[in-house]
Image (cartoon, rainbow, N blue to C red; front, top):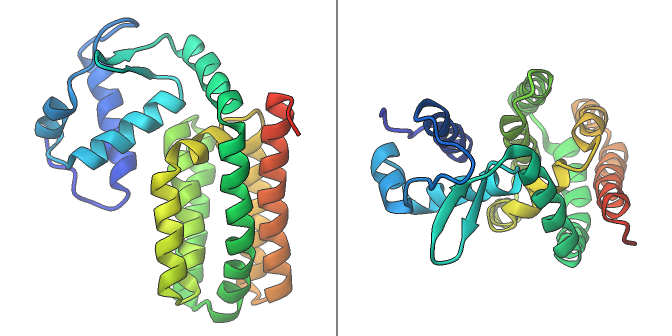
Length: 231
């Protein structure tokens, strides 16, 4: 298979593994290739494979079993497993959003002040891709665009430390990012909330950008709490 060495690698690896599942006729209960085999097939690093497997697990396509490997799941059952993951990790998700609420409104404020025309074009393009993927039901790709949208805002600040912290969070807390976007209605509400943030940054309205980011993250956390019945 052609080497996958372009931007948004995790998204491409995720889609490539889904293609393997479909083209090779793997069914619920079947074992997926090992991490080593997938690394060889797709010519990417083990970390990229692990990230893709985590995304597929949280979105209900596979289930990793300690010491046994990764198995294909019934997607409907996988969605139930995803909800259970959210319930079991509610405290982790709350901590995840607490840190993001400390960082990202400030990042949005700086982005609105410093954004160049090229920055705004990049943010607009990613927003449109997010909407298109969501419209076509390509949820893993939409989730990847959501992460990229936030990372672009971080890069707009021209603060390397903030950008690195955001990138690290997106990678190390990948399951939390995915799970939060799988709560009912969250992706659709994200379309509206991202647009509000985009418009504030485009207009260089610093206070409005910070407020839009705060509302976006607060709403996401509230949706998780409603979904799990926690507070």
